[in-house]
Image (tube, rainbow, N blue to C red; front, side, top):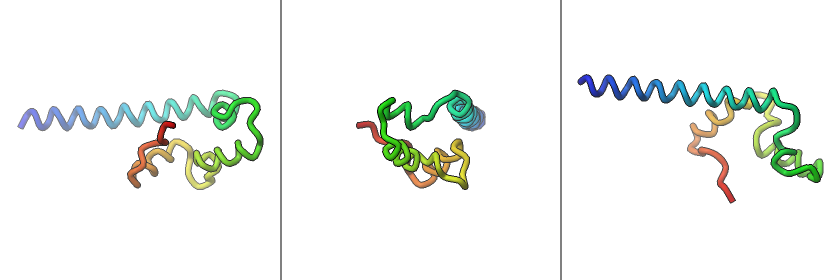
Length: 84
């Protein structure tokens, strides 16, 4: 039984660290000046392309803070954007 308790403690610690890092990263993103969509698309991006990427990333969602978007996405089985 002690190994089960140990594993549960480690799992709880993992969840705490992931939550803390997620909040830290989103906090840093919103403190720094600039727009995430412009950073991804580059300085010559059109306003239409920036607006489209903001909607796709969920940055224009008024009902949900940006730090809660990964939680919502993971509940539906989506764990991020595919690369490429």
